[in-house]
Length: 169
Image (cartoon, rainbow, N blue to C red; front, top):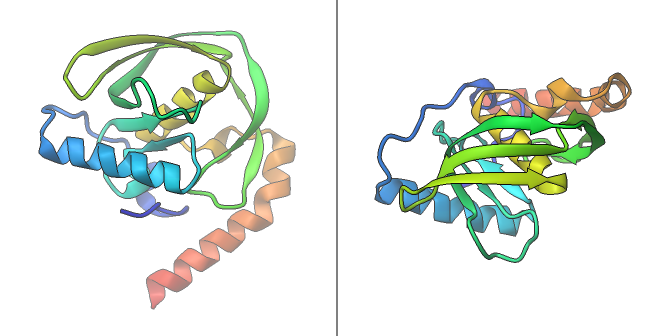
């Protein structure tokens, strides 16, 4: 399992919901957690590993405890606005200012099929929004401030050129 790098088209596709929690779902979730920790990320979504299913893994605290796998997550409520720097494992070397809700309420399922209702603030709120955006084919570069978009334009072009070279070979 590897991180999919922009501009791979899977990153722009809406995922399918997970209908059954089977061994494939459990194995992919485990592999995604391992990869997220290896890459020193705080979250990872199915499309970022080439799996177009509605599953995210998150550990904003880095403590490797508690619920870290969220199936079919949906933001049901948000509140406040916070502008902060954000990056993405699918966009190496790129960060920018993104405006996101300061607090969100998320409904999801865990690997046991139990429904969860999570209220998250601060960094955890930002991570949920970022990863759920991935499930909907939305990327953080689409939400950058104009200044951040301009300052990252060259880096994005370089990623696109590298992608085309790899695809052509």
